[in-house]
Image (cartoon, rainbow, N blue to C red; front, side, top):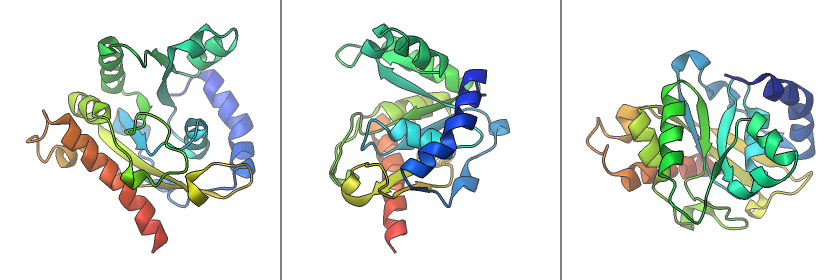
Length: 207
C-alpha cells in the first residue's frame, strides 16, 4: 500500500540514495509480497537516515514510521512527513493511542517500521545496546509477521559514500516469535527474540 506521493518520490530518489550511501542489499527478495498482509519491519538504529535507507531498498512496501511530534509543527516538513505516512509520537509522555493506532494499521494490512532500541545508537555495536518492549507488544497484538533488517557499516556510523549493507532476513511469523502463542503476553521476551535475529543477520554477514 503506497501513497501516490511516496511512490513518486521513491521512483525519483531511491536510486540516488543507494548511490550516495553506497548501499548494498543482496537479500531484497526476502521482502514479502503485499498479499501477505500487515508487516512490521524492525531494524537496528544508528542514524536519523535509517528510515530513508530502508525505504530505498524496499520495492513493495511503504513503511509507516513513528516520528517525534515536533516535526509535525515545522511548516511544509510536517505536511510532507504526514503525506509520506509518518505519524507523531510524544517521546516524553504516554502513547497508548499511538500503540492502538499502530496495531490497527497493521491489522488493516499496512507496513510499519520500528526500531527496538527506541533511539539512535551511533557508533555502538547494537548487540550491547538496550531495547524497549514496544515492538514485541505491537507485533503480538496485531499477530503480523516481522521483517528483521540489519543496518551495517564501518563503526556503525552512516556517512555519504561509505558503504552501507542492509541485510534483510526471513520474515518471522507470529507463531515463531511467540513460541506458538505461549509468549504472547511477554512483550520484552518477544522483542528480544526479534532483536536477536537482527543481530544474527549482522554476524552472518561477517562470516
